[in-house]
Image 1 (spheres, one colour):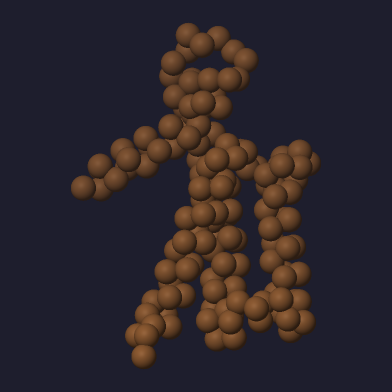
Image 2 (cartoon, rainbow, N blue to C red):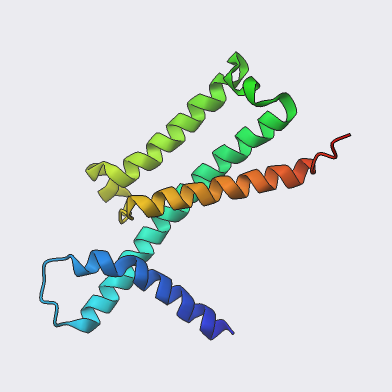
Length: 142
């Protein structure tokens, strides 16, 4: 079973990195080099997606938890100003790591496609919503 999990991980890393590795300027006849470059690039891209998902999920979970106790409108109140500042700084730091060349090189991320970034953010927000809903329990309508 562990062997299948390892093969699945390698397949995901290869599928993530192969499109980027194929675009590199080099001789496309070296298939072993292409495979290893695809795996390395895929690992860096998946790391970046993991950080995007963790950041988005944490911010979404905090927002969902705050809204369940005080309502969605409370998020616009003055006492949530610090929350929005921290959320903006965290998202800007992640965006800088992905899109600003100096920060991109410093952090060692491989920039995944924008669709993958948006999918990771949506998945993290969805998981945060479900976690928040399960924590407070479904409403009974009474």
